Amino acid sequence: MKIVGRRSLGMHPVYDIGLAETHNFLITDHVIAANCFNKSHSVAYGYVTYQTAYLKANYPVEYMAALLSSVSGEQDKVQRYIANCNSLEITALPPDINRSELDFTPFGNEILFGLAAIKNLGMAAIEMILRVRHADGPFKSLADLCQRVDGRSINKKSLEALILAGAFDGLESNRHQLVADLDLILDWSSRKAKEQASGQGNLLELLGGGTNQATASFDQAPKAPPVEDYSPQEKLRLEKELLGFYVSDHPLKVVGSSVNLMAPTNLDKLATVPEKQTMTAIALLLDIKEVTTKKGDRMAIVQLEDLSGTTEAVIFPKSYERVKQNLIKDSRLMIWGKVDRRDEQVQLIIEDMQPITSIRMVKIDLDVMTAGNSQEMLRLRQLLTTGQPESDDHNFAGKLPVVASLGYSSKFVRFGPQYWIKNEAEVLQKLQAAGFKAMCETLVKE
View 1 (cartoon, one colour):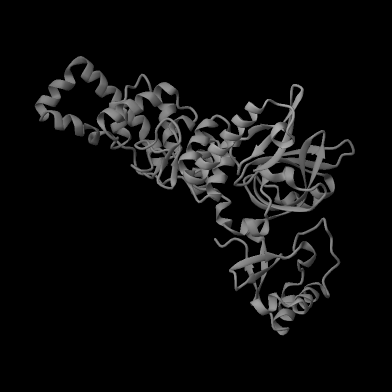
View 2 (spheres, helix red, strand yellow):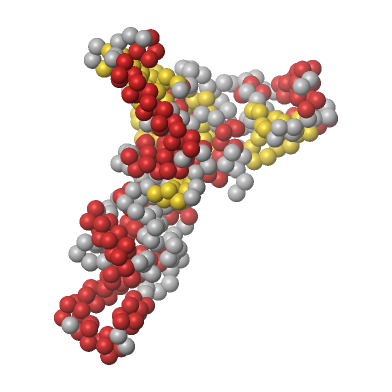
């Protein structure tokens, strides 16, 4: 249990208790200093905290599903808790037309998005879909759904939202094809509904073989000419528009464990970074707003996103001139910057950035004897710094990060920025000549 914040409640200060990224619970000063609030409040809050900690420890999937459902209307919190799920090795799956319920639902070690999380899908449409599915079984296709669900409760916009959010992927993975088919299927299902309302449908079913023919009639639904599916990037973009964040994949997942190694600070943890300390992050550039200062200099305000959340950052004129060629929307970047605190607001000041596809690193394999030998470590540091260009704390472009692989523990250790190198070939030659096993690798293997 860790106290992570403090705020005022009337005459009595209370504390927020961070419980591994779960909801914050309140506990009074009485628990901490045996004063202020009534003891009964302290006992109640402590008991609730104990219960939630027990549930998360013993039923993590069910607990996180309930937690996500409780904040489904708050995208920032949902994104943060999905990142927490990833850290617990719990997979968050996109909505599924035949498995999703109203809210987030646990399935084994996975959590399925609820239909209520999809934008442009009203509650009346969700209730009708669930009622029909529970009564008559799973849907076989988009045409089957359009035939069985009353068209007055679900419209084209709602169906497009279901398709682009991935809800029909289990039936047809080509989302673009389903969107192309949609108008034809809606016209067909409307015509079928009118025939049934006028009695023509019953007559045709009798002539065609009865109930089985009626049940299989969606097989005769028209289809548009074949089209290629959306590109992975476009599919993710459309998915994010409807869910508020990436679910089936994320542009930064390709970096994998390298994120924690090269950029250990998540954007939702900026408040914990000491002021003026240089930090690194790997993020997606969501939006760029260029600004001209009173002096006529150019600067920018950008929106960034990583797997944990989003934040706004500022690029002042001096840094802007250095990084402006990398300011491309939806690009994946390694960012160097510092945290600035003003009026209780935390702001990221970007000093440098590079596309993650251009980031390479020098990896040095160390055995247990070498890693534990202080003389060898001193010799390694000297090899990394001797003959290198003078350090510029505000310009990381072109410098290669250095990491050490500790073979005995299968772990990696990142060297500080003062040991990053500029003359790659020369330093590698020096390291190898000195008996160190060193090589250069790309950060992203695509």
